Length: 372
Image (cartoon, one colour):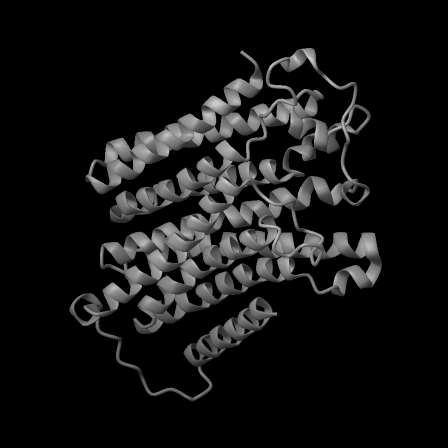
């Protein structure tokens, strides 16, 4: 069996396993949900390892390897070819998302069942995209290895930079962490308990904002090195949609402190925990759909139509599904939300007011960047 065959099988296995995890969550079978998520995550991790091996060893009979790797590239550039293209970056997103969901799972407590169900549904969608946008396609499905080009196209000159090795993995770690925040907030809403999760989610929100911030800074330095200050200040819609998740994550961190101090902003904080992933899904659609054309240096070629429909469906479910849940819970909020803590007489310039003002300023920045 070729490595590519194994990769394709693993992606189908991942999709089926995540579906089993969703069913386990819906039917209140936590053990089934845990096993399904574990098998699906392991399948995604191994398939990404196979892709790394293909790009590193120059298996040019695969379309993806031929398009992005080359025999005379330095070893680290052959590794970075694994995330240079559309298919590989989708797989990297799935890997980082599954990793962060797994790392945060033990802290979710009573929210675990809903948390795994929501996260697995999202990952099932990513695995579905990868079955259409597969990095394991052969150039010639019939001849296979018998038709192996002597060399590949390699990376574009703009990607032959050390930032290519460290910037995409760093910012995709940040993007992957957004699923953990989203799934946790959705699970807390489903359980009608927005108090228990707010303390354990705080470190993960800080990690997420830190990774996104580091990734954005790296991207800025990379643009400066390639295009000088013109590249650093250039208006790029995709970079803006990467900036919005960071702004929302930082606003969520501020909101956590307000909720802990005053028992306020419960539903608002749940929305702030979910908005970063929503913004990234929207940015992903802009990047991958071909909608931006030549307006962004980050745009990919247009996706397979079936994969694009799945991506659109994921974005729609994430945005409309979550806000539908929020509105459903708001109708009965008085029955299950705790009473706000009585405010002590304070000077108008106090810490709580400062946090609230900071949140609104951050959200204003995010809206301006997102609309722009």
